[in-house]
Amino acid sequence: MMKNLHVRRPSLVALAAVAAAAVTLSACSSGDTNAAGKGDGTNAVYVMSDNLGDKGFNDSAAAGFDRAKAEGAGTKLLQASPSDPQLWRQNLEAVSNSGQYDLIFTGPGMHDNLAAVAPQHPDQKYVFFDDELKAPNVLSIRYAQNEGSYLAGVLAANASLDPKSFPLSKGNKKVGIVAGQDLPGIQEFIVGFKQGVASVDPGIGVNISFIGNFNDAQKAYDLTTTLFNSGADVVYNVAGPAGLGILKAAADTNHYAIGVDSDQNGLHPQHVLASMLKQIGNSVYDSVKKYEKDEIKFGETVVYGLDNEGVALVYNDALVSAEVKQKIDAAKQKVVSGEVKVDSVLQ
Image (cartoon, rainbow, N blue to C red; front, side):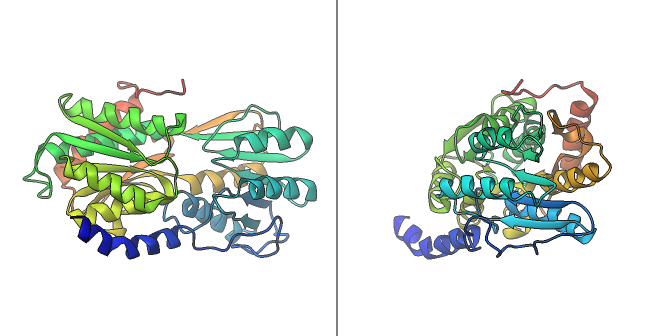
């Protein structure tokens, strides 16, 4: 087993390279993913604490900026190495000082930086997504990942209980989660997933492993392999760019996984049952359009959940039957109607 793992390591190195493929930019450099400069509409910049190429969170955000750009917005994406927090702060300060942008977007990992910079620029407007900061010039956006993860838990439980419909399952009544770090936002995924599993069968065990970061695809691979070896029928990816290692481990060991943030079903189509979408791109696009209509209430927090399509479970139709989809859709309706209230660590 160890011998085979060593043989696979080069491909995991390649995965990590894909997750951090774009070149790190210096503060306010002219190189960027979307052409900078004045558009016909809102001028927006995304100050990142990571790179594009994760096939998940960051790429979803970029898709939202692409939509806005296609409709006349000026957009710029400032990427930065996830191991260079000094550059994150430099980029945020530089764009704030520039006066060039109507909206400055930022997200995970940037809470302390934004808390320090935003008060120094009271006339600058910021959009802070996947986190929350109480400030009069900041719109915070949260995603009800607990609700989407609830549906992922319902799916995982059904897969573990029904080897006939899910032939890679051993019927072990065990599922797992491999997560990046033990943070409140990540716990939202975990509590929702566990509640969804328990709604199907409270006797199904849920094992959880933390990588310690969101970029180590090899460690994600190793932890996932360990969960599968201990009997997990399905593992849920809650690990950002590192999650590419989770999905690859499912493929290499011939098990099932559930993707996250973006539609990851096509990465390993025989093994990824579904993906829990956080519609980052939709919220980015919506924020730009609402700003243009003067509909944003800065200082407040907007939540995107199942009821407004802020989160969703997108199925791999080749692996998930119509019957199982109906069970999950019924669970979704109970959440939307309020019949089921999904647990949260943030409320």
